Length: 253
Image (tube, rainbow, N blue to C red; front, side, top):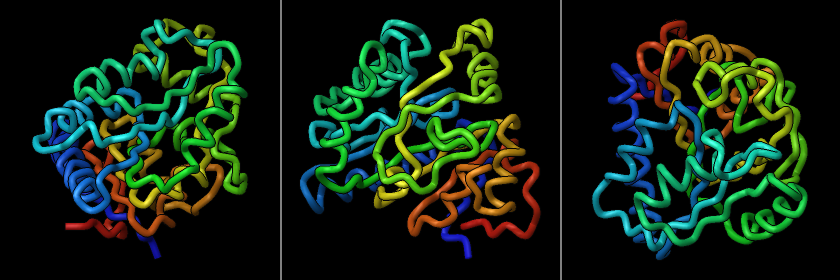
């Protein structure tokens, strides 16, 4: 039986606000209970509204927030508009003043970057992970067929054609040949170790992936389907991304 809570909002702005309110509550609660909070931050166009709302949320002590990086391209400098480091600096770090962040440098020595960040990532539990779902069903940069078994915290992965085309469609690159073929990605099992996962998935272009992940088999061929096995995960959809769901899917109030 699915453990995933599903919340459908009218549009992507409402989705972003609802997801951010949920995330802000989780951050405040962790800070109150344990003095700090460790999070995994997602990137991409699907996270725009969510991060805009979250960084404006009141009463979050950002000095007590520690951020880990979900994924990054191999061989792409941090100055490139598509760099996820640049994205997080612009949309999260500079807006909040967070000082404890651990970002993946895939420029020169990806393996070294993985070793450096992995030890810090695994030193304590992650309280909240933010995530999205790719048009091909990927979770982070774990494209199908994803590795559901590895215990490694980060992997160097090959990006499939659908994933690379999505980056072009979202405007990050001019054409597919400009998109790196490899990336560093947090592994599926590492993401699933987070105490809570909050997933923001707007837009009609995600509707088929959402349907397959929520109504099909839990399978490496649809990597984000694994979220259904997490004990404390919530997915936020808008009407467009939820458009293909059948009435058999149970929606949380």
